[in-house]
Structure formats: structure tokens, C-alpha cells
Length: 398
Ligand code: FDA
Image 1: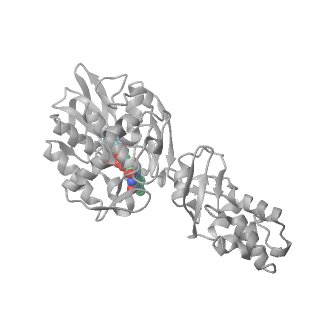
Image 2: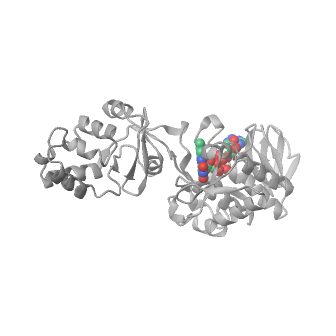
Image 3: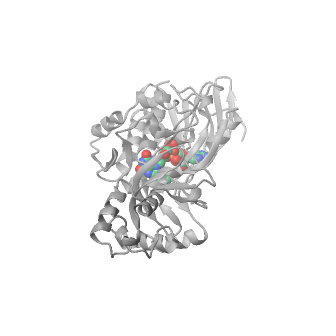
């Protein structure tokens, strides 16, 4: 497509997700004429499906430590300037009610569509325009900004805001567009990888775990870099549940993960007391007061715990050794379920190339990256939307 831009705006936003729509409203309120383009037929589809349809829109415990990035300091500035309370205040103005589910995670009382309506409504009220079902082609610089070819014509803009997200869930329209634009303008990309994603196993581990599909138990899931005390769920392909999704964001291919199956229990003392009271019971059956019996049977079958001895035959040292094994249960995933089910993309546009206060490129004035496409990845529990709001707000104030 040739020609000079036939339409010009102060800011052109690519991606009508959480970050792009929030940016458009805030920038519009600051007086900018904003156009938002998305190739999808509907805006903010990930907001719609998030939180089981009720959108876990923030976490009241948000701190920079809840985010993974090559530069752990990068998110501090934006997070400090737009807090969970700032987003809650917006919901209040729109009569959107909410509740805390657990661990500071805030969900809508009703459907997530209320948040999409708020985002689109605020954008329109601030004078923004939204074009859906519009594809984006060549992007280039001009003397006073950017020239972008789209299926709706050539658009010129002083600012180009990339809010097209990461690679997770391709069937919802995820693309690597942000990374392509970033590379085109000389930015580095930190290797994108699926995060907040279930683990899959092969061979015996896979069939063992499949035999107790649906069983959930509280654990501490640990890697070299982090530990999460939440529920773990056995699935027909491997392991899932919040503890596993959280630790997957820190996992590297080939690494084992360590699971404390006795999280928060004084298991050694309880088993020794049980031995005194029930010396004739089997060791495996005694463990059933601590763990679900289907799991105990599986662990005995795998040889992870001794199945046969009576309590009377277990020395205190032997009990301690089994307790230690269950507190440090090591398993090596074959991989993850990948982009198909990952809630987010870890990695992305290297923060070294962006100003942390505005999300603007250090290499190309007027070019901004916000939301999930940036190498800032939140934990499970509302942190990723908080990053979308905060990074968009920072860019809009620029
Ligand atoms: P987002 O992906 O939302 O938006 C990007 C937009 O860009 C999309 O509309 C897409 O169509 C468009 N786009 C992509 N490529 C394009 C191209 N080439 N041309 C034009 N448009 C293009 N987080 C959280 O905090 N709480 C939660 O409850 C959940 N729950 C959840 C559930 C599930 C199933 C998923 C997959 C994810 C979550 N998340 C979440 C994560 C959260 O959804 C995610 O971090 C944010 O949506 C990221 O917002 P962005 O606006 O950056 O990208």
C-alpha cells in the first residue's frame, strides 16, 4: 500500500486489550486524539474470559516483587504511580462492585463485560476512536511521527503505542507483532516463553499422575528462585493448580521442581505420636491423616514411601527420612502445555530500551510499549492486569 497518511492522530494504539484501551482513555483525557486498532472482532477478549468470566482485575498486595523481569526495578515507577486503589476508585465511579476472593485477589461481583464496557466507554468519552477487524501492515517513521498501513487505510500519528500483548493463546488472536516492531526499531527481545502454564509429564510420571486426575492438595512449589504455598492439581497430562502455574513462570526447560507435599504440617511429630498410639498400623495408612489417601497409595506404588512396614518397625530416623522426602519431592516436567494454555508471556521487549517512567522507547522518540508485550510478567492473581493499567497510565501521562 502506498501513499501519504489520509488520517492523522496524536496517538495510534495497536491492540484494544486491557493496556491499549486504558491508555486511550487516559491519553484522551489529557487532550490527545487517539485511534485504537485491533485485528480482532471484539475488544479485550482476555478481560472477558479472565478470572472465570469475573476478571481478577487487580491484587491489593501488588508490589514490584510480584513481577518477573530481567530488570526487577523497572516496574517500580509505573506501579507506584497507578495503584490497585486507583483502579478500584474507577470501578466505584462506574458502579462496578467487587469482592476479594483470596490472597488479595479482587474479582467483579458480576461479569467481566462490565470492565470492558467501562474501558470502551471511557475511551469514547475521552474522544477516542476504536477500529476492530483491522489488520496492520508496514510501520515506518516520518519526519513528525509514524506512518502505519492498515486494512482501513494509511494512518499517521505523532505517537505509536504498541499494546498488542504477548504470544499466549494464539487462537484468541495473540501475535508477535510487538516484538517485530520492537526489533524493526532496534530493540532487543528477551526470549518470550509461556508462563502461568500447567506442566506436562511423559512415561510413568504421566500415567501415575493421570491415575489421580482431579485430586488437589495444598503444597509449597519451589524452584531455585521462588516458592509458592497454594493448591496443586493432578491432571491427565501432569500438574496444574495455582502453585504449579506460579512456579512455571520461574521454570527453565530441563529443571526439576521441588514440591513440599507436607506444607505447613508438623508431620514428623504427628507420625511419631501416631507410632506410639497405633504401632500395628502400616506406615502408609498413618500418612493418610496428613495426605489424601489416593496420593498416599500412589506414592507407595511409586516407591516414594515405604508401603509395607508397620509403624512399630519404623525408627524415628526412618520417619524423619520419609518426611524429608515428602517435603522435598522432586519431579522433572517434560515441558509445559505451551502457548495454547499459558495465561501470560514471560520475556518480551527488553526494559533496558524503555524509560521506566513513561514506557517510551529510548531509541525512537514517540514509540511506546505497554502491557504484556514488555518484559514484565506478574504472578497469578490480578498482577498482570495491574501491570496493564499501570504501564498504560505511565505512557498516557508522558
Ligand atoms: P492483550 O493480550 O489483552 O491485548 C492485546 C490486543 O492486541 C488483543 O486484543 C489482540 O487482538 C491485539 N493484537 C494482537 N496482535 C495484533 C496485531 N498484529 N494487529 C492488531 N491487533 C493485534 N491477568 C490478571 O491479572 N487476572 C486474571 O484474572 C487473568 N486471567 C487470565 C485468564 C486467561 C485465560 C488468560 C489467557 C490471561 C489471563 N490474565 C489475567 C492475563 C491478562 O489477560 C493479560 O496479562 C492482559 O490481558 C494483557 O493485556 P494487554 O493489553 O497487554 O494484552
